[in-house]
Image (cartoon, helix red, strand yellow):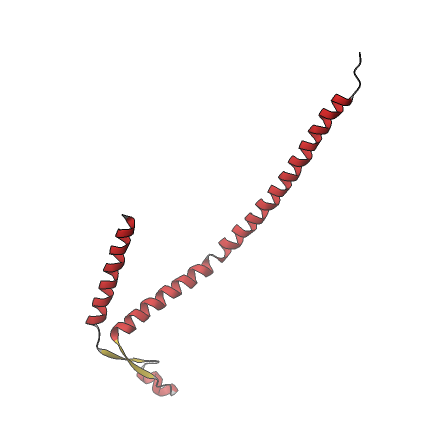
Length: 120
C-alpha cells in the first residue's frame, strides 16, 4: 500500500514538474551581473536559457545549500556522538574485564573452599 502511495506521489510530482517545464519554455537571458555593474567591471557574461531550467536550477541550488548547511550545523552533534560512542566502548571493555576478573575470583574462592582441609 505504501509502495503504491509513494509511486502515486512521485508520479504527481513528475507530472507537475513537466507542467511547469512546458508552461515556462520561453527563453530568458541570464546574466552574471546586473547591466550597470557588468559595464563597470567588464564582466558581461550572459546566456539564454529556458525559464524552467532557471527555475529548476534555483530549486536544486537551494536544496544543495540546505544539505551543506545542515551537514555543517550537525558537525558538533556528530563529534559529541562519536566521543560518547568511544566512551561507551571503553566502559564496556572495562566492564567485561571486571566481570572476567570477578568470575575467575569466584571460581578460585570456591575451589579454595573445597580444597581447604576440613576441621573434623
